[in-house]
Image 1: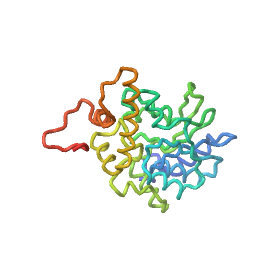
Image 2 (image 1 turned 180 degrees about the horizontal axis):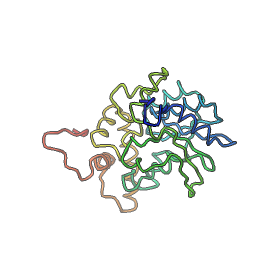
Image 3 (image 1 turned 120 degrees about the horizontal axis):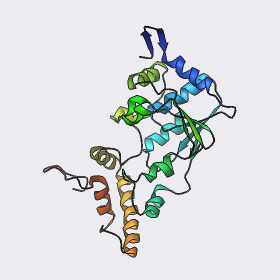
Image 4 (image 1 turned 180 degrees about the vertical axis):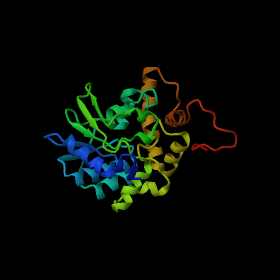
Length: 254
């Protein structure tokens, strides 16, 4: 709950988050990272309520769902769309490989750009994953010359939805379609089932992957390095890897 009764008195998570934003406000203002998910929606609204100086940015990955892009454009009108120097499709050819768990060039080159020399505000929360339980409310990345502030780091999922509903905030429609998290379609960190769902829900994306992977195979054949026959072969490997499809289960290629 957003308001908790503790042995130390009442704890108002909204007030605490707003106080955090006000406490660390830099003279040049915050660089607020927007993803189009529920957490960044809350952070966007909190920054407005805190009346801190801030500019809002969305990194275009070319893999977000069209619903996410439309939601940001319609409901978060002052968010700046930041386009990368190279598209995802170009980067696949440059890296000679689509992103995988051990080589996540997609995050580095598409999602984590921008905010150098600034305090970057995000919607990172401890409750999101085991890995994020080790994050701190204020962090520094000297390699990228950035500082980070996560004002709702101690909120759980119920807190986020309570805030959205209590304030009548519009949110990404993908949640109403059963999506638990909003992010890149076919992310290598998502389950096989989720990636199958992404390709089934967005057949045009599947065709775009195959076209891109066809070009990758052609490039690798020129260099004498490929183990794949064509783009569909790459897509099958990328989705399933070495995992065997259970007997009787149809894959996205059947």
